[in-house]
Amino acid sequence: MNVRRLIPTAALAGAVALGATALTACSGATAAGGGGSGDGDGDGRLAVTASFYPMQFLGEQIGKEHVKVGTLTKPGVEPHDLEITPKQTAQLGESDVVLYLKSLQPAVDEAVAQSGVKNVVDAAALTPLEVHGASGHDHAGEDHDHAAEGDGHDHGGTGRDPHVWLDPVKYAQVAKGVGAALEKADPDHAADYRKNTDELVAKLTALDAEFKTGLGTTASKTFITTHSAFGYLAERYGLDQEGISGVDPESEPSPARMKELQAVAKKDNVSTMFFETLASDKTATTLAKDTGLRTDVLDPLEGITDKSQGADYFEVMRSNLNNLQKALGAK
Image (cartoon, rainbow, N blue to C red; front, top):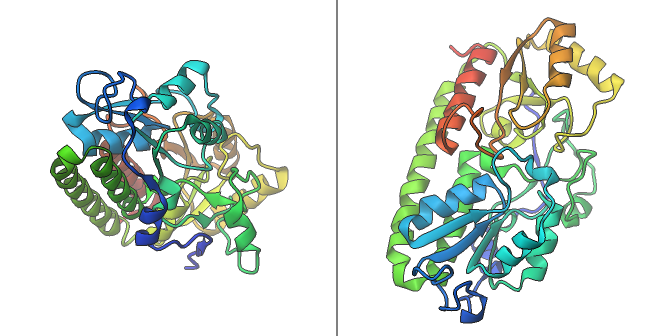
């Protein structure tokens, strides 16, 4: 089985990445209630603004009762297409801590840069981002330094893939950085943040073990999905991701790509075409019909809605594991 390898383009050492993020204490002027750091909404809690669900989840799990977490991407909104409103821009400026992932949402990147908030945590600086294309092929020989420098979402599939939260190991690295940021922004509760971070990392480590065991022996290693969000997950667990589109879920596949996927499905004994909850399943349904495949959900966890197969990150990830096991013929 030819597991297509990922190409590191920003392999930052964890310690260096943490040191590079802006984690200095927030001045009283940036707090919404004017009460200083940790008093963002006037009730003594740290005001945290997250760009979208995976960052919101970390803020809530690590901050717990000491934080009030708001999110810029409401449930049901496809985060890649988010436009920032003036109200949300104001919300950002009043935050004690901002949690985001640079390159996923260009509008957020711009708003964060202009916000003036001192405690800004960029998840992309906490774990190496790597190159994935829709086909998952090895990008050897490409100009990786150029790709690493790009801030935008490369819709051609040659840019850095931001979907790090779908790999529990990489998500745990981000969690540690968020925990460190909350400790520095609110040192009075540093011990609690440290304890909560350790507990969350332990849960993510256990989830990683579940995926390793659950996907260790399968009849097939290839899965086809509408949105190439699962490159890190595929690499972690020895699978091959074949995306209908690239890392941008709205990009339309070419007729040549559709023909190639039909050939892949036949060659690699693919049984299932995966689609997601926040984007149209029209293309996946069409390809599945043309190739005689079943359809199922593989959720990139960019938001939780009433259509999600679970109420939080862990529940949806376990649903993803179950769906992958069925599709790949886990033994």
